[in-house]
Image 1: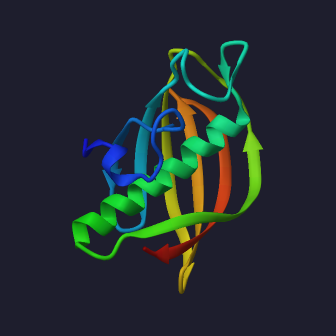
Image 2: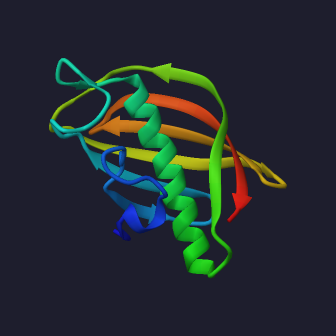
Length: 137
């Protein structure tokens, strides 16, 4: 486990939707998030679709921040340019531990296409493709 994701993401409470960055290499990463009763995007005790997608996006942000930090390169902030091919399979109840994986499919200049997936145990919750545009700050 790499550790807390907070140093690597621009988000701050209450919008933080990732607790830990578990793994990261040059093309992929895995994050972990516990759904709490204070988590945003809850409805009737379940983390809704927007929360699942935000969790995947923040996993991508934590991965990118960690890779940039490790390489001691300039910090780049990412913006979601588009969200495509969203498949929602299940919602996550309070108390769930979600593991999200991201994998860079393609990068051209400052645009990356990332495939994200989230799971609760062996149950897949969500899958989507994010097109992320990055800028240097």
